[in-house]
Image (cartoon, rainbow, N blue to C red; front, side, top):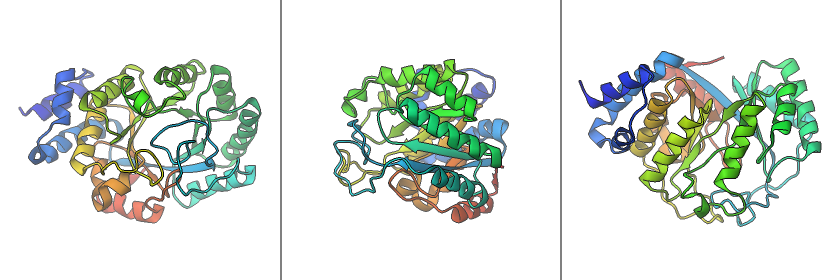
Length: 324
């Protein structure tokens, strides 16, 4: 029995990989990547079949952020040439949901706003938006609004939102290298507040910021230990004007190793090949479907992405199916 089959069997049996095995996964030789993917696909298929969940993101407030996250074009240390605007109108947010449902065939609509965290007034405003969307469209609603307490999360839940996204982004050790205006523990506290409010959690990380292999392992095990429901694995898209603009692309093999590790550690969870998929992996990005069951289409916060129509063709031509 190959080591890759052994890892997949362990995951299917509900057993957790050791840290040494997880490190081996991240070090899978290039010639063995296909074998690793085939075994990891058995784990993915057990929970998700061949379904691919399409997600659409709406950046409802751009720029104007006081945080200094070095990977982000909207941060206060960024000089990137981006659109800057305040909260979109309720009509614009609703229209984004309609397009996600009818045009992109999305299952999840992700409402994202820049800033440290939402005010009470903003929570009330977004709750009204969510109620209107849920009344008309069968979409999963995920909100990514920054730091949040239990009360604010609960008000979003009562309006119809099912998930709150707040990424750990990297390991606790590496976190001060990418942000100093809030802490790793602040992010953990938001995740715990979301859990206490009875909502589903969405949290993952960004690969390619200069972190070490141990940082990736720490992040992967932290996500597993927090029992996160939906896990976006992002791959840095360096943007001119940000402190990480000179970082190299993430190689396809490294992305597949990382996604495979997250699947093996979280066999039944919703795992998304998220930001940077198209930029880093190009035409080969369909290979992420072996470990991951979800993708974004129609772009990200300040960068473009694969169109929904092209993603539909890719999914179906590779023998997968769109989840509705």
